[in-house]
Image 1: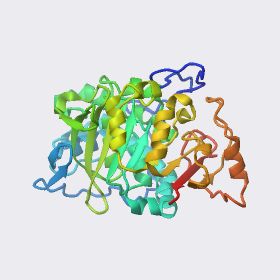
Image 2 (image 1 turned 180 degrees about the vertical axis):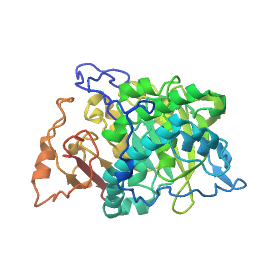
Image 3 (image 1 turned 45 degrees about the horizontal axis):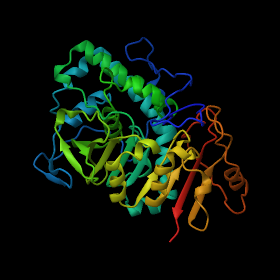
Length: 421
């Protein structure tokens, strides 16, 4: 995520920096005449998790256990709604299949397929294949994925670590809710899917969200929170959503269930999405907690402190994190990551290289390291550049995909730090 540009380091704030002057990329709106007529020319993706056929939905009689809620059963409405707002054809028995005859949705479906196939071929497939070779230990360990400053980005975390049982996302945006299509008129639905496509424009083009744009796009009047985008990413990567539940984080670090209409709009509200692994049919879970991870807010948040104390050792993923973890007013979450991680996978916008001393961490470098984009100052890492240039010792490997702020040049980097011992 892109949280800020040109931060004023002399001023510490309780929330994240939201100011940005980045040129806005406005994705083609689905009700405009601009249509991807060459969609058939786009190479078709071959991701193992890609949904290709209509198939029977999950067993409605099966019951799963959630430690915070109890018994979880399959409710197909969440999967049916998610497929519709992801521009995917309905499975047999969906009450929303009749809505697919609308010309605006058909155009949305075509444009979404085109944009998705583009990133699947150029980004997601190379990421998945790269992960087979470079993240084999992390995939086998099957630790929870800890993803601070994530926004709704389950997409890239799941591609890198497809079989993790739990993915834990943390960011400022509200949880929100999936749309109630039965209570929405034709025009309202058209406006909604337009907003969905626009909100994903930066992910399609740049690979990351921009916070100040999400603040406007994920309001109740538009896409309504991170939950719809999380669900879209899940069904678009071939998974089936089983159910979802809302919770509130208590002061002692435990979770209390909330009613379905709570929407998770308050700090320390959390939503869990339960979904079926597309390869082995096991149940996985992604949770998203609305919270402020800056030091000032964290020091006042007893519930979050206790939550992290109780959290098990995880694999941490950081991407396009606006260099927040470079600054002393994000030192608390930086220390939590270092103390709770067996492996950290990040780009240079995450934890500075100096916090991974070679007597404690085994560091692998990928891609190239160049001066950070001009939006950020004071975050260039001389020691990291030296490490990249010291090819006899660190031996940086090539990175076969573009993922990060240098999306226009493909001069990207990834850093994998594994805790020794």
